[in-house]
Image 1 (tube, one colour):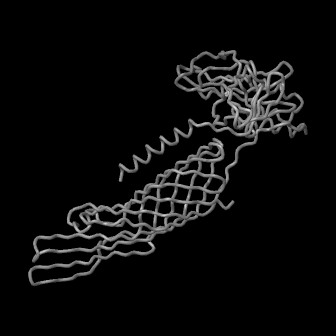
Image 2: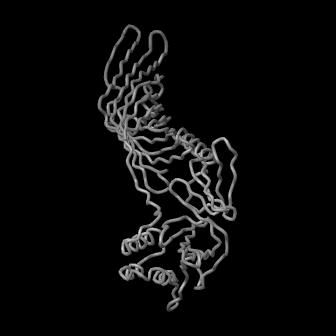
Image 3: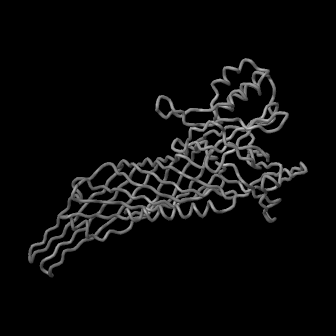
Length: 419
């Protein structure tokens, strides 16, 4: 069981790695050095760091070209806009173990893309380095200006204390001279996207000026719908004293499954992560045969019938990645099932010379009414439909410490989103 889960996990990681390496061209544009806006397709990725280049092609059949900041004035895709600027980047480390006692900012001049957070009478831009270093920028009559912020070590009474050089506070005061009501807000502003966005929003409300563009903050949402599919279940037993189970030859059970799902999509990372929850009905029915044959006059046979139906709550963490119009995904989580119905029967035939006995009873005297399992699935979504291959490793029905049971299932599931 553990080996199957590990194998599925390795396959899932390999598939997602292959997916991530694929292109994802969606409608976008670039702005040439002459100021012309060219519409086409941009290779859109999870840009948690600011891109050093962007891949663009005029249409789906044309060849792609990589553009660096020095070659274009900007680009846009999926309601995200970037400009190209020659500017200073503050490159001091931010991790506590890497900080120094030097308070002076450390700048590097570079030509980079800056993401537009606010554009209008007042402008706010963001650059995130490959080391996750944040640099925010404003724009005035002299051009783009970096908002200066640095962490450093301040030695106080022999102790090392992390302190902040907040020159950006004065820069913001100079940048918003025509709105006294936000002066207190500036003092409380931190060097973060959320805090700076809040400040710029307050400014536009204060002055009644309209912004040309505001990067909308991602919001979570909930997708819901139904699932139908087939399950293939195999039973396994191990333990001493239960040979009629551990050595029985059980058939594989093929059955139908239905579910409703609620996919809670997280706002960050362009909705790639979500908590997927399902309420599922599933069942299986298997028959096992065991024979202890000594000779024609002395033998025993056991026929075991085991069948369960469950109402299961499946909780999974899902990661999906878009390629064109298809979202490929992998999810992993747990299942918790309550028994709705049970078949738990053992029929014995005993022969000892002239004596023949037939017995009927429970196959497992101490069965559990609750099953838990591990889930791992791979799938693809297109528009409102989804297809998924899923593996479940369940702990079965035995509540004996001496008898271990497992119910391993493979699902083939078709889903349809209703909203």
